[in-house]
Image (cartoon, rainbow, N blue to C red; front, side, top):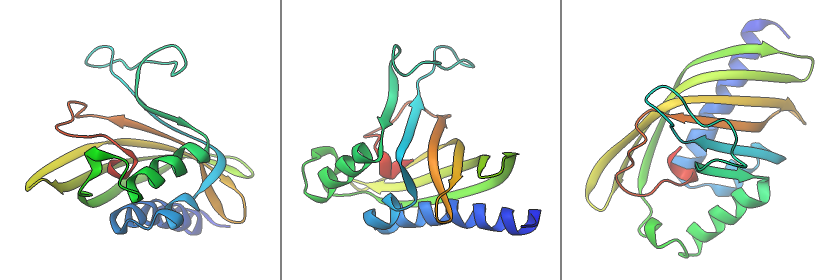
Length: 163
């Protein structure tokens, strides 16, 4: 596969992730991940340093395994997440997608993102950087997603559908 085709496939995967969240198509979103996925939003220690160990330090969000992602989406769908009722309307924008490292069946991808959302008659924005680790499993799947949240003073709730 040439570099241009690979860049296209990776970009399409990241765009599909955001679109599935915006449309609240939870099964489509979950299908983009491996079973052993890790989704991590580290907290900031200082203005320019983040925590390095989600096992011993406080994270903004840390979900280890697809079952935890599924549990989060089920809580939202069943109305068991009071902070998510009503569900915010979201618009994910992903750009500056760069493949930083490519192995035989794995990739490290950096990108920038912004999520605008409307909740309780107010508009909000969350923005930052993604680092995705992708692996080949019947196409590219997300095995690890690290979110560097640049505006970590979140006005309302922080959940999987906002990042």
